[in-house]
Length: 374
Image (cartoon, rainbow, N blue to C red; front, side, top):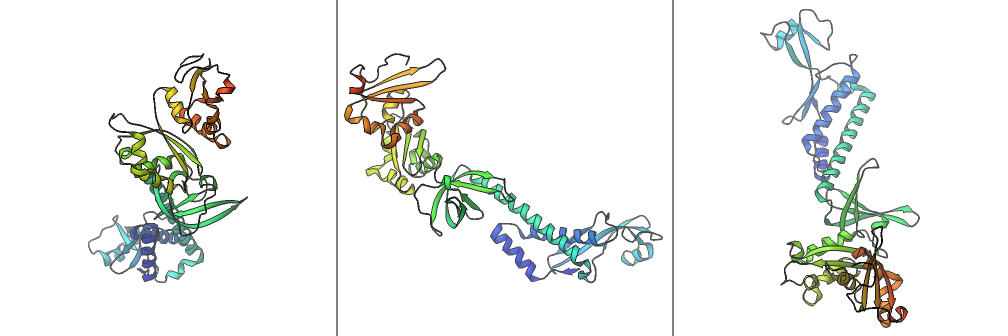
């Protein structure tokens, strides 16, 4: 038997603590590695049924091989003589197969190559176990909002960085495009992120997390608005330009529940919590409507709308022509076209905006259609 020593057991405990790899699993890797080293060292590499057994009480590992009891030994790696076998089991007979300990008296005789084989096998098994752990953690958390601590920041070139977030038993990587523009990420800070995807392109799978994904907004509203969590209020659509502005359309089948008011909360406390999580990103809570005229009008909030005309072309494209008072034109369009761009994304209608003077008075009251079909 081989005494594996306290240090190896301590290493097993550390792996269980840090990587969640059970001690018995690590010990099994060591046993497999010792068997691989044995097979590589002995002349007959085709020895089958060899196994290593760990004795938890003594902390020793022994190598055992099946050998057939024969009158005359022709292959010492497969056979054992009858007289020698009787020293172990007095009533043994020819033809029986015994499991015989073949552990070398001096383990160093395995040699450098055999030891390297054992090391490679253990490393490979640990890497496989780490991959499985990462995959399991991702499956348990994907599509959810989690809180982690920034562990390090990796510079990947061209002013791009990866923010590495400690999520407990695994790490999450937040690439530049998933970060909030202008936000300062510092090691040690705690951040709330959305678990987006698992990338398996590298040697070790990588969990990608995001603070820029629209679904993070949904998760935060579910966290701070009980009516969304219990299904009384439903989020119908989200349009987001991360770090700047988000529009979120909400609806409730319960006539006694104001979905917009529920999201905003008393004195705005609920939405303020969401805004704080998103580093003061502006959020417009929009009342969803099955009537596209009302929905588009709501989506262009805070601008006042004079009229909305809806058009559909032969290819199925949908366009809304919106007229607003002259003093509301810049508000409806928004800085850099952001307000109308988000409204179009939220409602899935292409939106063209004109002022009343640009329309030349050729328009009807809000809610009517002018040309095309409703």
